[in-house]
Image (cartoon, rainbow, N blue to C red):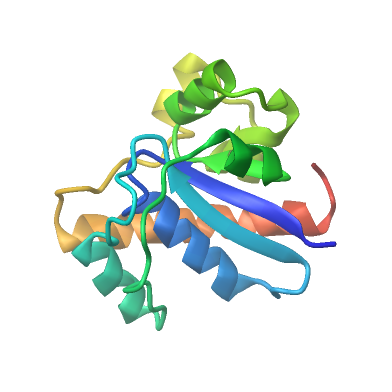
Length: 160
């Protein structure tokens, strides 16, 4: 049975959508399924145009992506929830009945470091590129890709 990995950010138009599609490109689909959602997503919103452009530069088409809001059933179905920031993680743990053992920031899971309110905000968060330059989106996508590669290695080791 496939393990379901859910990426979560705020609006599901930049970071988590890029993470979902990058993860799909980087691994075999027969073992894992990837999805994304946002804590404050407006259902059906398109991916941000700079995110679409940056992903297209890597040969990934996210132009059909439609944002969805994180709901309890989506969180329950996931085997692993990877958030873009410590605040996203904290919000999920405070507002949804999910096991703490399956919710991590992406960088926390990738690096095996625990995100706390101090370290989480500084070194284990992926900054929101929304409204920023194309260069900022490229940097964000690279940061996400690097973390996903490490996270996939950990997934393959069944270390969660």
